[in-house]
Image 1 (tube, rainbow, N blue to C red):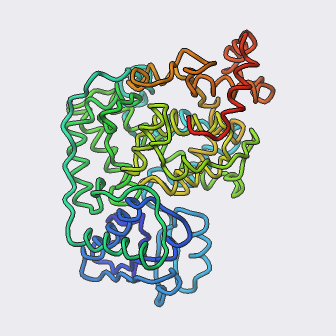
Image 2: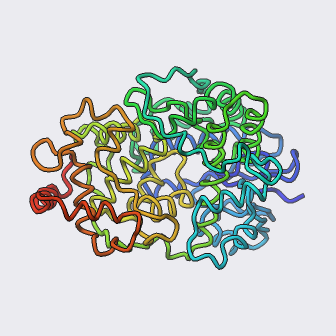
Image 3: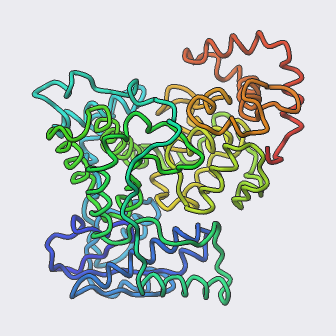
Length: 483
């Protein structure tokens, strides 16, 4: 049996053909020389690789400068998760590339579904995938007779969400070794990272990942649904699973995650709205985004229909939360700095929303999210950021720009109460940068967005603003300053 080369995001047993298959792992320092990743992301990936190397009788870990140096024998490898890695593998002699694993829907099934469609929408794919894989289905009908429980899952945050904390991560000697190596790389070799070091917060082993999965399904999934879109300054995790990082490392198979969530619903241990919302994140968004990465042309990442050309300002790129007075953005940026993770609503409606309002280059935003988030990969961020968050593809995979003013953040969080800015004010000393930024965005792109029926009402409201000229002048003057 050929030795199976496992990339650092293919570390679970479902990437092997049998439990005893020989394994090659490669730890390439060149990856970290090329780009400044979040320190905690680098720690998590290296810890996961080294823990996997310690977990098996015939596992060979090669620490080298480049991947090519480590490939010295015939190997098999599952389809990599980036175009660059795939091209690299295809050019290696004696390396057999297998179909992708770690996702639910096969590429050929997605292509059959997608071909001929004018618009690719996640909700349409999600319903197809539910039927195709028999997930949350009762015969030919969706469980509960509804496909989507979004309307039940948009509750504003409670004052406090009383759910048990996930099992803590206990670092070991491997983590100590990783931390010492990263310190040495920074000190002696000029390798740079962003963000702060800190205790490892996410699973680096299959055992840790399974413990987190069991705990989530039993203790946090029942509360997940109603508050999945809410934000609390004092509770960044709420009832979220925090499983995206171990799933994207390959420590958990998304099929087993979905099966456990559905089993909880069938056993009466979790309500349907929570289970459906969670399944939609994995079988819906995660699979959809993965397939779009390969289905769209390689140049999709450079899409920029709104001609957003500004570079990320230094305060944002360096995670300087103290430079920001807007409470929501400061807190979320600090969360990225301190944890390398915030959940999907701060990503989309605080970070992505602000970037789109300010006209930052979509590719730069995607690269920043890729490097700064522990669960970020090129395939994760390309369509998520370029298409959904920044609307840079002109609507190929989303129906409207996810632009919103301070009213949305005020409704879905507790940020605005303690902020120097007023979400109801758009011009003046107390003007909320999101409220003002929202109208400024619409004013700049009115011609490009006029044909979007979902923006008809906001664009009509734009024409009724009596202070639009003053607002535009104010936001032009703000430029790249921290709000």
